[in-house]
Length: 353
Ligand code: IPM
Ligand code: MG
Image (cartoon, rainbow, N blue to C red; front, top):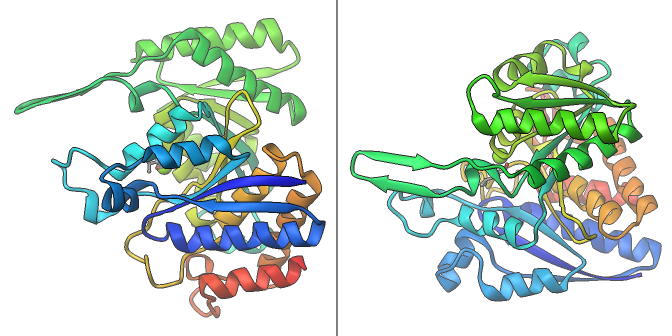
């Protein structure tokens, strides 16, 4: 098949991992006889430097024209002056809103060979396999903000239809897995969470009678993720809670650098990015872990292009790579040999081909 893929490298380690993701997509195209055209454009701090806009019109147009978008990361100290009017992160948030990718899927699986890379005890990690469905285009990230000399506010708003559609995505996933859905909120304090809880219960009881719904407060969920991670199957939650809980959950997998994400809406076009940030501390050193981005490229093939065999080929190659002992610094134990981003990617390509 032919496909147009927009690649947005962004900032920090973004370009380093995006290059790895692009190389893997090209390799898959060659191996399976597809034609992927990869078109790069600017986002985040890089776009502020070039166009004084974290999401230039041209970038939006290229993303709209494409079948899918692969993104590295945005942000960095250069643009994080607290008084700055434009910030790199605004580019990413606007892109998510523009593309209407309201459902952010963050699968958390543990490679058996990386159990030692997690700070948790190995026995807790057995059978951990969950997916967090994070609402991505609403809530406190997108509400009105105010600031004066002595106060500041961020408004959190959720509409019934936004909750219904994200719960349907999560429940449909649960129906293909273990029929277990856990909704996370803060209904003892937040009005938005009380609406969230009521709407979730209604959608599940009316449309997904076979699904077993569990409800947790976010503070308790943060604890349960570490005390009984294997009990979770599909978790659905609002934008900010999903952001926080998935960084926490990444420690089950050993490193933030391992985890991919897929942001999808009502059509097939999606936005794919590793869940990690731009990691300014290691940027430019060529040592970033490309696995999260490469796994995101696999999700892109599956969800936006319908190429399941190709996605599985990448996922199998990633599993093999780790099994073979290939390690970037973030997942290496003190005595293990570490590979650079490019070496890790080259080893993966060798397995893939
Ligand atoms: C993520 C990131 C972003 C978010 C930042 C960079 C705005 O942390 O994708 O998880 O908070 O959504
Ligand atoms: Mg985050």
